[in-house]
Structure formats: C-alpha cells, structure tokens
View 1 (cartoon, rainbow, N blue to C red):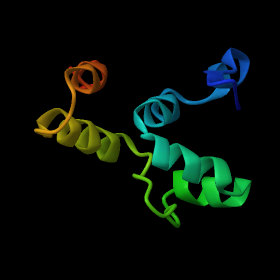
View 2 (cartoon, one colour):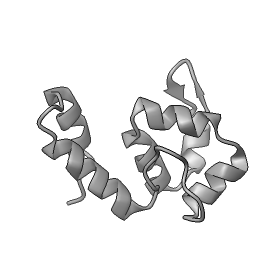
View 3 (cartoon, one colour):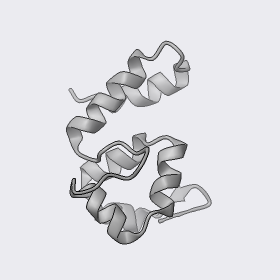
Length: 90
C-alpha cells in the first residue's frame, strides 16, 4: 500500500475514513507491525477479533484515546503534538 513512504492515493481512497485516520496516527513501530502482518491478521485486528501486538485498535474511540495521550505526553515534540492535534475530533 505504501511505496517510498507515500501512500497510494487510489488504494487510500477505497479505505473507510476511520481506517485512514488509524493508519495516519500509527507510529513507526505500529506501522511495521501492520506491514509484517498477514491479510487475515489485519482483518481480524480491524474487525476487533484479535489485536496485532503493539498496535492500537482501529476503532474511532481507541484512536481518539491514543491521540489524546500523545497530546498530553510531556515528552512529545511540538511537531508531533501539532500533527496529532489536527486529528482530535471536534
């Protein structure tokens, strides 16, 4: 889905908005875990059946909680906070 660090816009357009948001806020470790997972493991994770180790759930509530924790993190850089603050729901 990602080549040279740039998401394929055609594939991204086919994904539900909450999945795009989830992928957008995952850190590098989570993205590596997703990239190593099988299609079945990703499907199970997204459907809430069985989680991927070290990766937050993809449901909107879990993503919102993760974003809030990043914004409140004293060790987060200003750039990280600004990036994640943009995703906080209105």
